[in-house]
Amino acid sequence: MNTTITDVFFDLDHTLWDFDKNSEMAFDRIFKSRFPEIKIQDFITHYVPINQECWKLYQHDKITHVELRYNRLKFSFDALNFAISDENINEIANDYIEFLTENNHLFDGAIEVLEYLKPKYKLHIITNGFANVQDKKINNALLSGYFSTITNSELAGVKKPNSIIFDYAVNVAKAQKNTCIMIGDCLDADVNGALNAGLDAIFFNDKKIQAPENIKQVNHLLELKKYL
Image 1: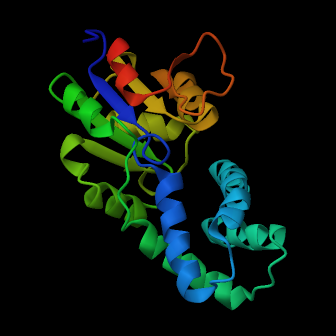
Image 2: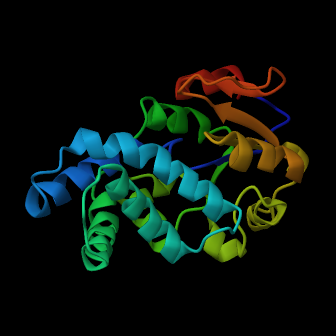
């Protein structure tokens, strides 16, 4: 146990909740009923990086929520050279959000590490995801009992990496920044966002990308036990 830390903040998507696996399952269900000619792996190959780029723009207020939902699908279908109407894109976007939250795959070790941490620290979530969607993910994946507070960007009025969302979350948690740590998969939004706001941070680097040597990182959630 790290006696200098009292409160541990987690990102949700790509950190605890396996967004890529759950997302692929949602699209597979949609395409099998609507567009069986689309090969799911071909679509996913394009969608994953396009979605990441769209989220980066959304995090920095370069595009809106509506544009995010539309663009990530439109650009993916364009990359496949698959002609599709805006009406169909909007229908898929709605089905996707509905089906996505019905899948509950978590990263390996997620429950075990939460069980390990809960008796030692107050646990919280800070997410840029949309409130109603994230609440469904948390509840359906049986995560809600682990967390004292859940902060989303709609509540805070800004998105990570903006320091205001970290200030908001720490305030709601009734904590002090110097005893808080943030764990997330995004160097920009989670790690640098937290460090710039005055919190400590750990990079969940499951894809083992190049990261600055001065940043704490783990490749598997159970490795958090080294730090906490």
